[in-house]
Structures are given as C-alpha cells and as structure tokens.
View (cartoon, rainbow, N blue to C red):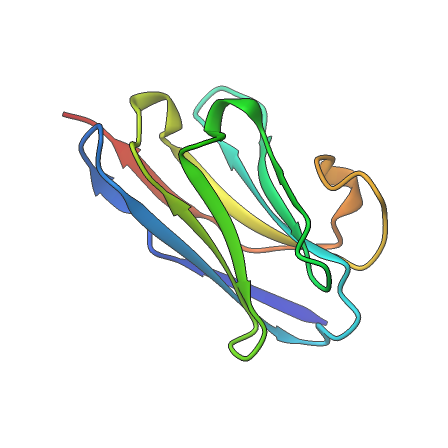
Length: 124
C-alpha cells in the first residue's frame, strides 16, 4: 500500500504564491512518476503537472506553464508544486498521485494511488 499526504494549501490573493507538498510512504519503491491534478467545484478533475521519478522529465498543462514548477526530493520522498502568480481560476482542490506504470502521465488512469487533496483558494 501507498499513502500520499498533501499539505501547503490555503487562501491567497491573486498574484501570490504557494508551495504544495506531497509526501509518499509505504510501498513507493519502483514508482515511475508523480503528478498533480486539481478539481474546481462543478468541474472535472484535470491534469496540472507531472514529473518522472528517475529522469525528472516534466509535463505541464498549458494554463500553468511559466507559473507552476513541479519538483521532487528523493531523500524526503516528496514531490512539490511551486505555484506562482496564482489566479482565481487556479482555485481548486489539488491532488497528488503516484504511478507505477504507464506512459501518458497527463491521464488520471495512469495513476495508481491518490492523496486526499488540499484546498487552494485564490480570492481578493
């Protein structure tokens, strides 16, 4: 079993920054990638960013390119999402996920375990 715990969410104003963290525990050895997804009220959950664990290859959805950065820390078994210049449309529950397989890390079906989610609110 794998456990993923997100933290770092909160209420910020437009233009502010937040850093989300996701700590993995349990049977995480052999992971292929980790990703961040988000779900706003009344909307489908959507891909935000992903990073392959060994090579560090990155993928982002277009709307966050240049503003968000995904990174990983091997020693801490943690993946981060640095979010800068936040906009009201970034408000959502953010989920991290881990994949032990797959090629398309933008697809939810590639991921095997999910965290519980963390709320990000962007409002003036």
